[in-house]
Structures are given as structure tokens and as C-alpha cells.
Length: 472
Image (cartoon, rainbow, N blue to C red; front, side, top):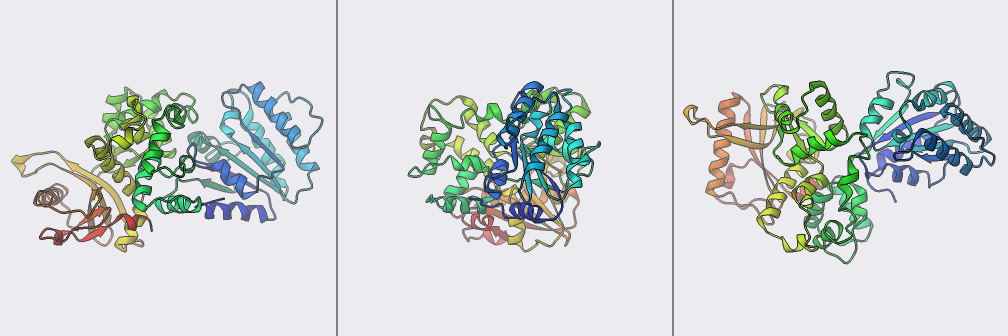
């Protein structure tokens, strides 16, 4: 059953019902549900379907494609000597089909593009020279190799330039969609428990599908990460190798960001990874961002070169905080509840949750229609010039000349603004005004789980956003 994919389902069905041929590319990170979306939409029934082979040679890829041709009903299949001939066999399948709309589904397309194999020219020839001239073909291609998909298919500068009729970037679930998934599948977890799971799994549907009924969320995390045969123990090993042909430099970048969770500038990344080629680093950062592993945040009032890159993939964040330590305690999370290590991770992960739910935050603030910029900000200590040194989690700079200076605080109960917290907030506002020179009004804004305890300091807070607001 499809959950949280209503828009994508409608896109596919409109293309299916249309009286012309469509060429659709679907991309997104590993485990995000691309294959499931297509199969569920078309009830697992296709005129032709095929999936590329991981690490298969040209000969093996073509042989597997011929086997799929045979499975589709072509009893006698002459062995294809190249991709041009393989696509000729696909044309025969389409010609002989009585389906009103011929749905052609090719999964893991990037694996079929072997060096000097001629796959992309053959695909171009199939679509441009034949399929696009018909009215009854729906060609759907998928790949987890997001960067490959964007460069070779979506932004192709050759024969496939501007040939796609639709593009679907499949995004992770948000909190509300995860809650819907939990309820639909008969699990009994409250919102705090779902939030904790989101900090581990993010919105990746496959990870959520591994949950077991009858276990608490903490027990489930132990089962999936720390038990003897934990399903997600080795996930990290395949996460990047399935996307990038040479994953080592990408892993080095992610590793550096995993070790500095507040983020790193470009120059800091160069020092941490040793990647000195400016163009090469730019490409790899863009590819990691397009795959949803990292995100670039421009610091308020600073140049683009001072932008900060942060690790935003929740599974990878959790891995670097815990799993990479080769923990042998099968009940690790159950035994570490309310320890400094877990509490630190909860605070960092909750920040990431908030950054992934900016639309919900803006909705709560009543500024959905207001043009905004999302920034982080920091300054170093310089007491000679009256600067205390500050780190601001989140700034929402608004066109209506207001800046929401957001403090993000994970808490299991209503949050109390103490004198110490009050002074820290005052110092941040002072530093920000002094260093940035902004004339906008500063609205101190608290994002926490259960709201705010009213006291003499709480009146300074202009807006409070709770966990429930992130679910809307």
C-alpha cells in the first residue's frame, strides 16, 4: 500500500492515461522506495520490466536484458550482440503487446551503463528514433545513483537533452507521513517515540518497514543495529558503493562531516579530506547534496565561500555517533537511555529534524507565503570588541524585516528558560546585531518538544514551536 506518495502516484497515472508516449525518470537515495512506488502504482504488471545488475559486465548486462525479454513473452530470443540489438528485441515485445498502454520499467539504470558499452546512445536511439513517435508507450527509468541520473539522463547534453516528459525526485517521508505509516501498519507508538525513530531512520521507508510489533522503539533500534544479525549493521558499507563507482572520496567527505556535526566550510573540508582539486571537490559536494546526504547552508551576511556543509542523512549521522564504534552490547540503546552520549546525539539529531521540517515551522509562524532565507550563523569570541562568541542554530530571515532567531532544544518535558539560558540568548542577540549590522527586528523563537514553562524569562520568547507542530 502506498503511503505519502499521492503526488507521485498522480503523476504516473496521468502519464499512463494520456494519449501520447511519456518518458519518466525517478531518482532518490537507496531504500527510498522508487521500485515500490512503480510496482504498487501499476499493480506489479508491466509490458516489460528489467533491473540492471550490480557490477555486471557489458556481456552480463546484455545477457540479463535478453532474459527479461524472454520473461516478457518473447519465446525465441536471439542473443543480442550489443545494446542496439537488445533494444530491437524490446521493440518486438512492444509491437506484439495487446496492452492499451505499454508500460516499460527499467530499474537501476546506472548499472547498465558500463564503460564503452554504448548503453546511453542505444537508449537515445530507442526513445528518439522510435518510442517517442508512438502514442502508447510509458517508459519509466529509475536509479539510486542520483548523481548519475542527473548528469546522464535528466541533464543529458546529447540525444536525451530535454526528452524527459516528467521527472520525479523521490524524497524521504516527513514526520506526519511516518506517523501515517506507523498507524496504517498497526504499530502503537506515540509521537515522541516516532520522533526518536526519525532521528535514527530519517524518512526512509525501507528502514521503517523493518520495525517489529511487540517491541518498544528502543528495542527495535537495538534489534536493527546492535543484535548479532542486525539488518542495518552493514548498511553503511553498501550505502555509498551502490551509488558511486568510486565511493572512497565521498565517504571521506561524509566521514569528515560526521566527525564535526556543526558543519564544515569548504576550506575545512579540504584540510580534513585532502581533496585539493577545487573542481573535483565541487562536483562531489554537489553529488552528495543531490543524493540527500549533505546540505549546504549559507551563513547570514557572509559570502558563499563561507557556507557550511552539514551531514543531514539521519542513518549516517546515527552510524557515526554509535554504530561505527563496533558496539558489542546487543541492548546498547536500552542500556544507554539518558546517558550523556545519547542525550548529545538527541540534541544534534533534533536540530536536523527541524531543518528538514522548515515548511512546518514556517506554517506555525504564519509565514508560508513570506519570502524567507534559511541560515545558520556564528562568530568567534572577541571581548576587546564586545563580542562574546555565539553559535545560532537556525535563522529565518524574512522579507517582512523580521528574523526568527531559533533556539532548538530537545526535551522530554516542557522546556524551562533558566537565568543561564536567558543570558546565553541575550548574548547571541547582542553578537548577531553587532556583527551582522542587521536592522531587522529579532524574534527569539524556541523549537522544543513539549512547549515552554512560563516564568520571568519566558516572556522574552516571541514564538514557540512544539513537536506536534512538526507533524502538521
